[in-house]
Length: 178
Image 1 (cartoon, rainbow, N blue to C red):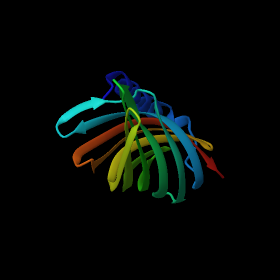
Image 2 (image 1 turned 45 degrees about the horizontal axis):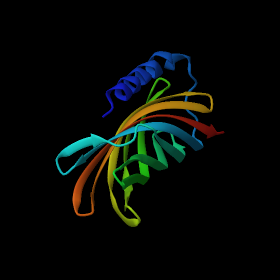
Image 3 (image 1 turned 90 degrees about the horizontal axis):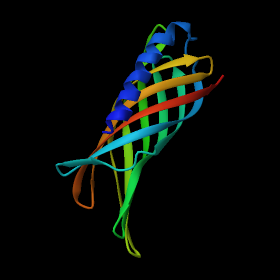
């Protein structure tokens, strides 16, 4: 994983914890958000990163203090070299199980991810996708309707008959409609 991004994510999580006593408690309801991501791929034993400029779009609903349901679109990155281009993304649907510690939310994610990869060689295109389990851990803090969070998420897939493990670190913000 991009070490610089991992350090920034860790510092972001510590900052959330440090400023959390000044934040307001999280409110339940519908929320939208976005974030930046860095993804690592372990493709059949060899690992590497694709794109450093990835993003995440979030839509969720938190009906209870300890439970949220969330959908995410994650751009996992792409690469282009010598006439071959690769583009990857995931659509996830997950339950978040939250524990409030003061005004900080610690959470675990469990759900399903539709991992998709598109490969273009000259003018020939092939695509593959698969639904696989996803899981992760995160920390967040809320300042009224605004929330900030850091998260680590994983899923594995078999695309083009190749085992692929994907791990993603993200820094995101959310806005809860009260």
